[in-house]
Length: 317
Ligand SMILES: Nc1nc2c(ncn2[C@@H]2O[C@H](COP(=O)(O)OP(=O)(O)OP(=O)(O)O)[C@@H](O)[C@H]2O)c(=O)[nH]1
Ligand SMILES: [Mg+2]
Image (cartoon, rainbow, N blue to C red; front, side, top):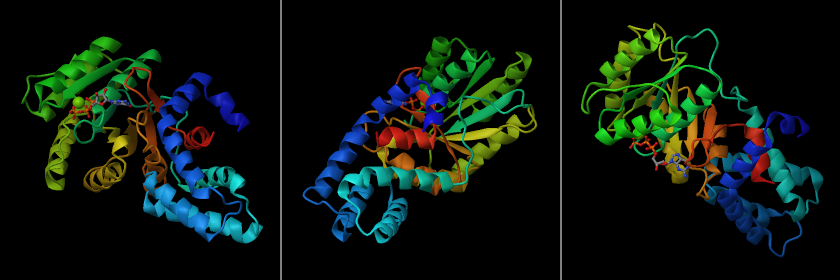
């Protein structure tokens, strides 16, 4: 763990610890109830543990994997005390997550050789797309990058205003049109304007509707096609934002979106103020798409680059 201490600032760690507080409190109070009066990890404790994990939104599949690993250790060690359970859970969850073969970033960064780098942000209503875009713009701008935002969520007037508020707060340019205009046209304008302004990063906000797969696919395909008239290989990344506080619902959305679109990274928001933080463990285990960012508050600094070890460390601290 010494290595992580060097990489992660104590400030980041503090925010993460605080953001996960509710999830932790809920998890450990359930866990302590489950092992109350028990000194040894036996079948009964394992059953209870299974329930605790499922009810902490880790998801059934991932829970089963974790339980199997603990069973394996029980079989090997013969006597496993319940006071060791925390440590063992932490180790096994960290091991499990390290086996999912997806790359992990350590900092807010954009791929090299893509200028402008175009990021399209998708997700259903209210999950935190616009907020995440604002926070990301802030991080990129702090690194000295030129950022341009595109308000391609033209479905509601308020959506455009909200992105404008973030653009003002971060102090970056925004490209927008009237409410109801064609999202693809806004995306096109944004890319053109971005290229003209020598932008390093262009982030496109999209409307949060998921009527059905076909609609979604058609709409996003059109936006992509139009963007590619300006930047050949745009968008370079499609970020799906999921609301962590919806627990299992976030799993469902991840399934639907990844089936319908070429999502290649995930952001899980609102981990503060929810006891459902375990959802990140399940999502990291089950999707071959990396969780790149986590939202741990409404403030401009409350977006973190997700690191599974740091997350597990914070969760079990
Ligand atoms: N506590 C907390 N609130 C968040 C976080 N991220 C976003 N929110 C809040 O969630 C609400 C919805 O966020 P938006 O960014 O507007 O969500 P959206 O996906 O753009 O929503 P639509 O534009 O309606 O589709 C806002 O009140 C945000 O402040 C987070 O990490 N933690
Ligand atoms: Mg929005």
